[in-house]
Length: 83
Image 1 (cartoon, rainbow, N blue to C red):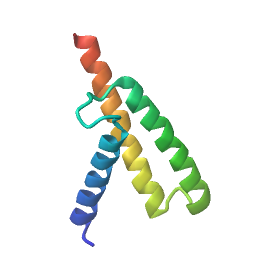
Image 2: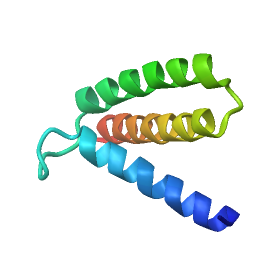
Image 3: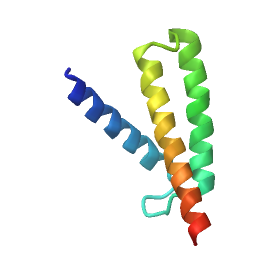
Image 4: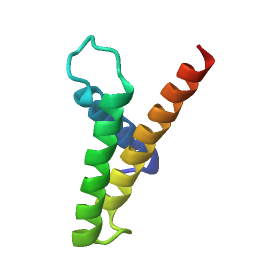
């Protein structure tokens, strides 16, 4: 798998994770739903990091997914502050 394919795959996985975290398909992503997703992803990262090591491929993937969630949360907070 090329670097580009891996990056595309990780983006797709992250996007799917965020979408799956939303309670209903048409529901707007809320701070609370992202906070819950962040907490779940943090726990997953701790579990994966403990069992596989923090530099393992799986830990890096989970860490990147967590980063995406944190970025989305930050974006929502910024939007809220500008309204």
